[in-house]
Length: 213
Picture 1 (cartoon, rainbow, N blue to C red):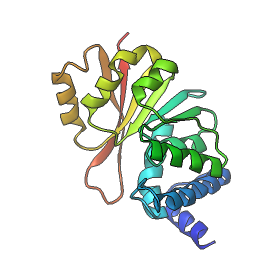
Picture 2: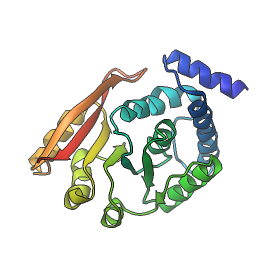
Picture 3: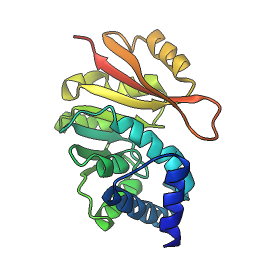
Picture 4: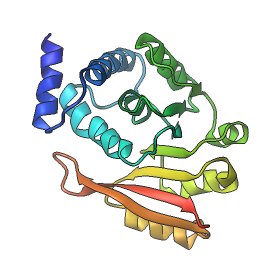
């Protein structure tokens, strides 16, 4: 009950309101994540306040941008954010996780089993997954500079429609770097969300990247 109260306090402090079923499953996810984190480094956010103010807020902003019934691949899932909270919040979409580090992929599969959430986990490199499976949207947070992500997906735009990437205040420099390398040729990049994380002086953004028609 103490942990449940802590989660509710964190939501209230962040002025967030969730349905009961989603709230309960998110708490389950956090507990399982923190248990696994004692064996394997999966997250730096080890209390409900940091989870709500960073991980959950990022995911809620992302959830607003995704169409119903979309097929999502969360790239470089690590401890499961944003993919697992997204699957909990948006039960109308299909979320898969991609994590090339085998130990982390194993942990993700364990967490999902323990909270009874059906999300496929691909323990492989993104390029290999995209050769086998199609998606509508790829999501990613803290998975590397923009130019590197664009290089990964450059040959695979026929296998997905859109990239939605969380980025910090250096996104403008990353865009310039990617453009100078020619990796934005034929692509449209838009900033589709901008918001402030508690305790941070600069805004976070979500970038949408799509192939030009």
